[in-house]
Image (cartoon, rainbow, N blue to C red):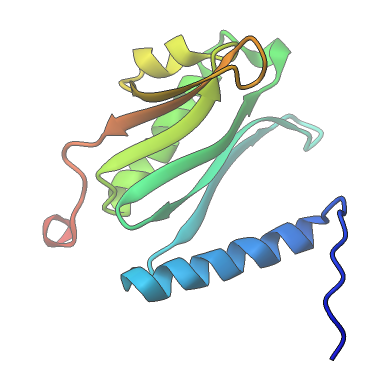
Length: 149
């Protein structure tokens, strides 16, 4: 058998998803937690173009927000707050007890703080001259399986 050849590539969405799936399989088998599900809410204009959206996943009682974007022209109208609330409500339905996300210091950390998130960790100089922030919101009153019935 020939030795594997390493090469740096610009990955396709399919290659990234393949890696995501393998990591999830490993994490689920090691922890015994297999309840992972994707989560997304998008807002489209009349032509069907996405003007705002939020996506991430839930797994093991945690809702992780991975991407969150509102088009510049749509900002300041409460759309971000509505999207965040929709995800939080779904996270509660999925019995999550906390939400986590990472954001940069130049993005909207005060928006998250105003919506109940707390700073958990900071990575300085990522990117240069800025900070990468890990934020968490604890969810009280989550709908555990006992409370759904």
